[in-house]
Image (cartoon, rainbow, N blue to C red):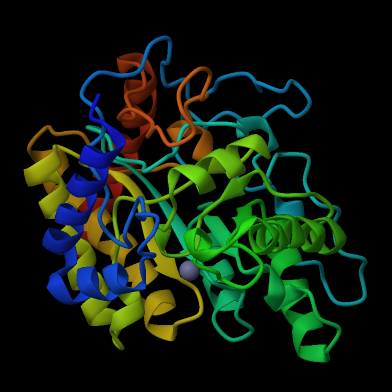
Length: 372
Ligand SMILES: [Zn+2]
């Protein structure tokens, strides 16, 4: 496996390739000088060609901790979202937080996840929220598609006592109630490698306290802001049981102003990943604080579904929206805290069990679209 230094270099190079020099430089200039960032924003390295010893991807692996059983991915495609997870009608007490594991306790202590792999498995993630205008609309869009996503919440947004912050905390609870996954995006969106140990603890443990108070449990999934990390930060997060969930399909939505640009960047990045890394799916990064990102989300889904019509005609694997980050999880075991998980390669049986019904649904959808 490539050394850390080699991997870092690859990531930065890919970063330049994926989103243009501007994005790469913008991130690189924010990176600390003393500790090199692991994933400078958009770009992530190709996964190691040889999976680390003793690690296989187990999409429906039992909980390592044993305390919370994770709901396995549904073989029939999008997991059904229980009706009780919808917003409670007015005047009715909100439903309790579901017994699934939205905080990632069952996939704690994993290798660093980027999400890339040879299969067309796609999961969406949304950072920096919640936002009082755009997150509720996004949640309705996700519910309409019966999709689950990852949300990396900036804890200070839901920590305060003002009516505005109480409203944001309600939205964060709604994210959990609707069956999505929430992880820590630190307390204040801090660039972690810049921080000394006290400030680092303030960002990570402070966010845990906010999650505990507002959402009922501490998070075990974390996404360092900007993807910036270092061996020291990795070790620190690992010691607290975190699994770092990064991404491999950036959309550049933090540097544009229209949904068109977001969709186009996503398309370009997806094509580039396939051409250069052989990655055909992974974790998509969007930000639910931008209207153009929330507007782009259903259009990206629609574009992938439209591509599925063509892929079906060609007899190729279809894009499959997974709704469980456990698909990308690999226990760390004896790997270093900075080691990236190998490519996501579930068993052929698992893939086919999802692809077969997906082909049926896709055939129905594409023929009804063609008739219109
Ligand atoms: Zn962020």
